[in-house]
Amino acid sequence: MPEPIAQAPRAVSNPSGWPEGSAEAALALHRLLTIQERDWHALKSQADRRGAEQLAAALVQLLSAQAASGIDREPSRRQAIELAEHALGWLRRERKDPGCPSHGR
Image 1 (cartoon, rainbow, N blue to C red):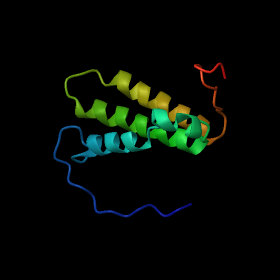
Image 2 (image 1 turned 30 degrees about the vertical axis):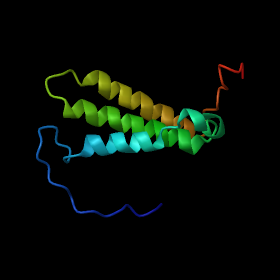
Image 3 (image 1 turned 180 degrees about the vertical axis):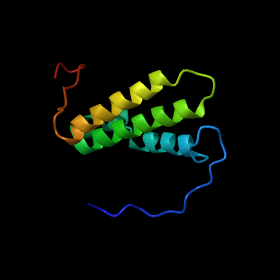
């Protein structure tokens, strides 16, 4: 198993308990990993890529819900869990590309 990247802990200065900028960093990662339309056909069946995209989406859901105050966070937490479970399906090779609905395959 690879060694975790060691970094100094960042100061927590917000009520969510997450380090400042965490939600923004997660969103930036998700944008980076999201398969764009022009690349969809080439990358849609790459299980690791799809899993990483879903894990990043789960992280965005979790951190965004925690960053917002005064709202019910439970739906976002449940959505994060669903996305993480979906990602694990890709990473375990339990999920397959369903084909492109616009092409009938």
